[in-house]
Image (cartoon, rainbow, N blue to C red; front, side, top):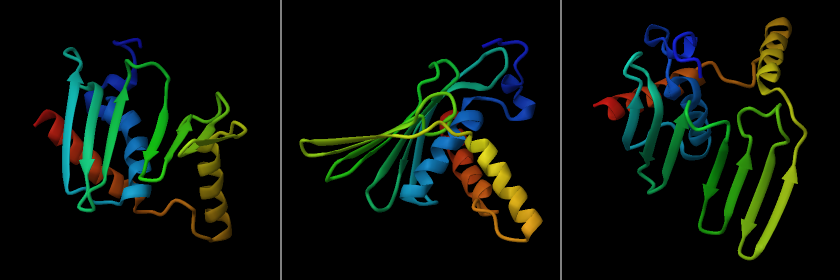
Amino acid sequence: MARFTDVLLYRSWCGGGLLYLGCYCVNFSRVFLGDAPRDVRAWADLDGAHGVDMTTHAVLAYATGTHATLSCSFEGGLDQRAVLIGTEGVLELSEPFVTWKRRPRLTVRAGETEHVTEFDPVNTFRMEIDDLCTAIVEGTRPLLKPGEGLLNARILDRIAVAATG
């Protein structure tokens, strides 16, 4: 990453790995575990020149006994994965966020069985914009609810506080 010219490294513009990348991890965990973790633990590696996190790791603990483990980094390459581990099996989704460069793959493992489904690449950002434009023009509700960003931001704030404590 071009450390001195990249806007993602401007602290005043809310740069850093957590806000740029971790927001997707937080949103994904909210879908499955809810909006209010009971406890948040986090660690961050800060860039000394810019004061933004280059890497952040977090654990969100919920009252139900479930946990989300998040890791986001500018320094970890382009690997992205979401894994759900349950008592009956594991779901693993490759390319959960940037889905237009490679074919996303869902792997379902239960016991000795494994089933893999590949999907065509799609530009999810474009789909969100198209959905919002349709909602505006047709006067309908967009798929993404208005308060979603605020709910994500509350958890991101808790992670940032825990990481820099």
